[in-house]
Image 1: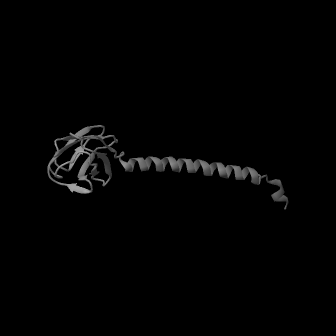
Image 2: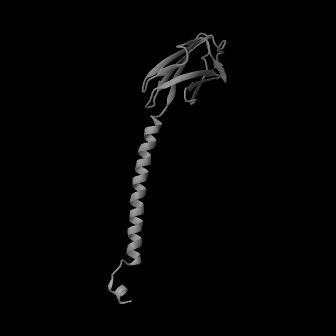
Image 3: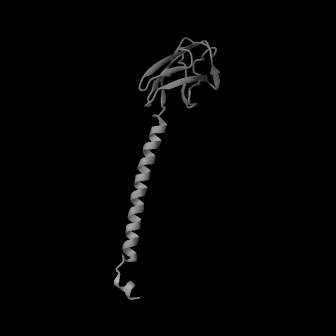
Length: 141
């Protein structure tokens, strides 16, 4: 018993505070490491915006598509009112848009005629299966 009394030890309160501080420090280090790892795997964000849709006559629609993301995107599909358009596209799909670049997509005669005043939903789908949509109506003549 005399041997144990002569040794000094940390109080339980101080030991608990040190244990909590070490746990928090390790947690912060692991969170920073996982965050850096996750950003590396994501490879940038994919973000496309259909800026404008204009109509020429009743058979042609022109879409200005901008890649506002940080990585190149590939437009894989084009849809109008839930119908996939495979012909009459310039450029043909698939086509790529670099980061921060804009591309003009012309759709001619592929969907029949556009009726003035009717609402049309245009959708482009990327190679990663992300859809981007915009609605437009041809102007009355």
